[in-house]
Length: 269
Image (cartoon, rainbow, N blue to C red):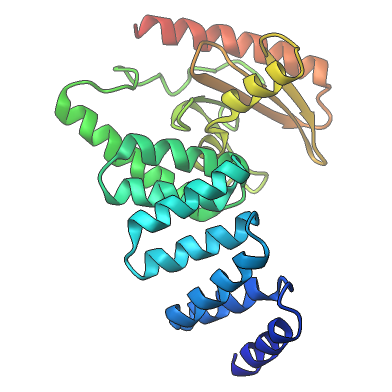
């Protein structure tokens, strides 16, 4: 690590505009040399004032130093440059959670996951914050989830029931169904969490392309075909079937599953 710091420091000294300052700042921060890390990043920002990752790194250093308000300002600058920056949303979600604003924390974490669906730490954070948010709603006497649990065989009789049909709400909580990998491992909660914010992104994309209101998405992956739809507002229905099932057939099954889901959801109102 010492050799890396020396090499990076030499690179930055040789070329002050080098982006090596980002790695140098990360290494110094990891070693707890926060003052040195801050100086390096501030110096780099002098040459790259509109670099989102540099502001994000500086914000994380400020958090380590206990400067939460300044960190929030830095992450605000990041989003002004790049509204989809995963690190900024993750950081702002942490700060919102720290001050007890669970609603804002959920918003930022969902946007962070939409920007980077592979970040397992965000998935875990979302799950934790959602549980706390639901406990808070229960304590206040207003729970924003269906009051009755769905029957375990809600999608019984449909292709993929029990392993490849999942109903989730817009916040990424499992409402019904199941989603399993080929090895049988249940990944319903993880998949539902990754779906958080998808409907908003789909609606935004459709609007930008002047396509009207989005209805469903079909995707062909290496091993499976996927269907994603919105049975009723603020819910998502995902179907996954083997590539041997044609996309058209998958859409038919999805329409039947959507009818079942809609009937159950409307019965809860």
